[in-house]
Figure 1: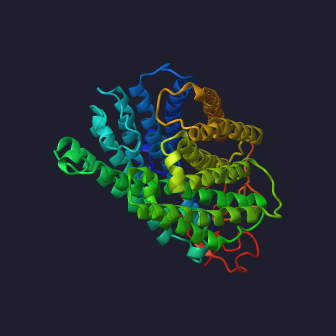
Figure 2: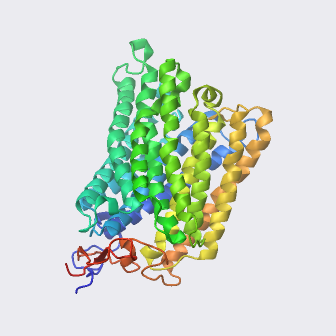
Figure 3: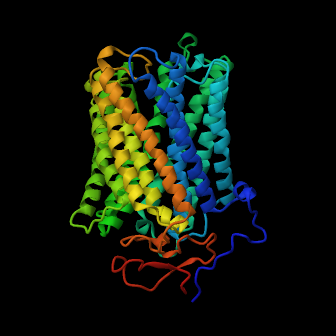
Length: 542
């Protein structure tokens, strides 16, 4: 019987120091790079949000010009979506998928390195637009013409950086699919894969489907601006609404790209701390696939007010409301997993529970927006802002925090400080609701989004929101401190880390070996479900 052999990180052909990180093809290193990059971008995007909330603390123009304010709303969104949330989930995929399916690494390691190193260049290019003649893009992250065509020198840089970010996503997605399909341990059928692996497989297909569409749309913008075409120029026979259709055909699946891996994370964490098997595993897989399919036929719910035919409005309304069904299945399954479980409330579980409760609030406000006649009232108000932040902050970001606390002990070999983790959770939860819940009321009362000034009756709710925003932003410094403290040392984590944890990654040492050379072989064992880790073990004879 051989154990999983490890190669020392200081192997003769292995660069060390800075070059190790530049040339690395190791999935753990690349996962770490993605996560560090995402954390950095989270704070850059967060600083822009602070500018927005400072300006909106009271009516009148306080700190910044309207143009710069609009640039902040645009850049904040682009950086958070393409620079923070998506790279963070790709970092998780890189770290976890090989360990979860018993593979030694990702299938395409060199492409993996390339798909990461494109990101910093794209990120720097995007941020550099702040210093260009005419200022950074100020058209909203949706880049609607004709407004986006008023961008100054920054315009081609915006388009190029978006292209690069898209290329990175597509390469990451190809890598994920090939790894999952081809490199699973013997005996790990598709329906035995962890839910995180499933959600990422489905997400990867979404990415490959919609990123080229987005690339096409922004390229048409580029040619409209510089090559005399009129795709979206009404004077030349084009249609600006066509851009909205193409953009949202990408944009709506994109929001599911940012939430499906979060579903996977939560589906790993809740069973661990409930000490029960996930309720309804196969229905979770089918629900995820249904959500992915439906995400392609709902895009025009972002466009109810553009003047589409009644038939179109009805179709998109009903299709949108239909997404609530598989999403509801997932929420009920999580609740059923916890039902009569032996629950404990460590930090990952707290963030997972926070996710379930607050993501559901975001889901319900999404259902309100799905109803066409009601959307006419809500469209382009702060109600929409409240909705998507409940889904993306208390949804995607909270699941990322949950994942960090859940797997960090496995990655580093050190336990995080539980008291500080719980403090981070409670401060984040309180302040994120102080920040975004009042925005529902602002929207219902009619405050438009993306404006630097507002009518005096909205002052109080905006002040509450801004205080919540600054407090939430400062709280995240605590998270950085916890992560650095954990990486540097602390009480040693066991190999299993969590009492109720299931899955192949928990059979590896904490931290896992830098390279795993022995393949995972099937173990002659009782049927799945009759004991933990009963299906596969690394390196035990065939």
